[in-house]
Length: 66
Image (spheres, rainbow, N blue to C red):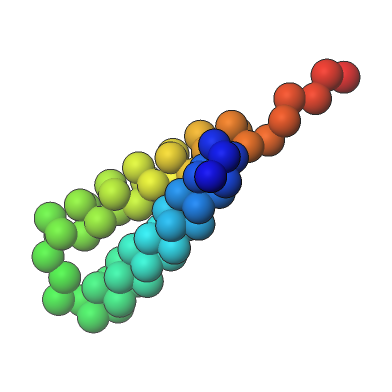
């Protein structure tokens, strides 16, 4: 596979994991019995994924000279 293809696959995997974490955080919050430490870890992981997604999107977006 070419580099761009690998990045696109990684991007989809990270987006899926990000959505899953969002759902898990929402479920824990709605239940009200969530462990704050677990919640903080999930939120931290979600933020890390968001940063990785942004970096990959930047690499895939071609530079356009104005």
